Length: 537
Image: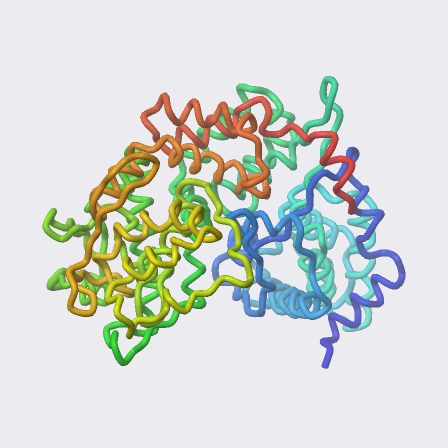
């Protein structure tokens, strides 16, 4: 059954007073981007605006991966009717919590003349304040007027001033102006550039994975953000905050495709150590390792390919073969050289995500590493490819290397396999759940590989190969730029992130230098004529 709020909002829309085309044109300029909030962005925004004790319960519509990033899909996905219903229910429950007796003292700064009657002045103060934070810009006069009118109507009908606030707030929460990050471009020089509030949102969601705070909105209001000095001041402030870790965790979770664990299963008969929560623990290990090196230690990002330092919990220790006698749920740990571990590529996450339920897959691992770390996507194989020889684990060819070599003799398959299999074959010393092994079907495993004219052996050799490849740091720069702008990384020209990449290189590949180099570059807030022509409300 549709909620009372949903029916009221439907009437609000029908009357033409809810936002729509008119509100989308409320800001002066051209709409050059509409990006649907991700689940984390939505939750973080609500927590920052209304408080962490406000519960967000409901179903969010999934994204899709484009060019290696789900962030790119936020710029092309809309909201289905079922999604609208879910967002409406969430808006209702959030607004009800925000205006109940427990929270209204904290969130409603004004006192109505009577708690049983409308008060337009107090309603306007409340809705204007939260409208600014939720829309990431001030409400237009019409947007505020219509919501105050709704609050008045509902307060009269229910003899409850706070019921009016509830419904007014709910219309803000389920408005496309909140659910989508709308980017507006205004004339600048001979072209167009994002106006200050759009800049504030792009910076905040990149670095904090949440809505702009009061200081950043103030910098937008005063025009500080359109000056080089003002921009640098705000960027430095955002980067100095511990909340940078939240934003960068979101980026690396997307870049490293850690959501893949949602669809990973392992054969429990052969791998009983793999339990339900293992995927979450493996993803957390990789994020902790990455953030520790990139932010806490301000380290060289290339070291993620060779470091043996990590953080593990008891579940992961069982697969790694490490006695877990530490205090606390997580503990720092450093693998010895004899373990064959080398950086992120030998952590359980990347090894398990890109393997089959019952066996490893050098091809899947190679394809994933090429796409994730080197920005080299692999073409989809033809529909008529015969995989029977590769999948025949009971035949005369005992190791996957032997089976792949036979498969790669097919001219149709050779070019792709020669580009990806060496990466995966060097990781064959690890099984499908990331455990160490030396033999396959009784045969010693050969972990030698040759790629781009360079020969290496095992995971340690692969780590050094990736460390020394200029494609890896260039790929990190490309992915971060694409993530920030909601673009398909495969379609981004190198010139777009050139300044950031140069800052990255000059700093010794420090993440903060890359972020600052990207967001303060002259082209970061520029809107092209193509954007203006193709993006429509």
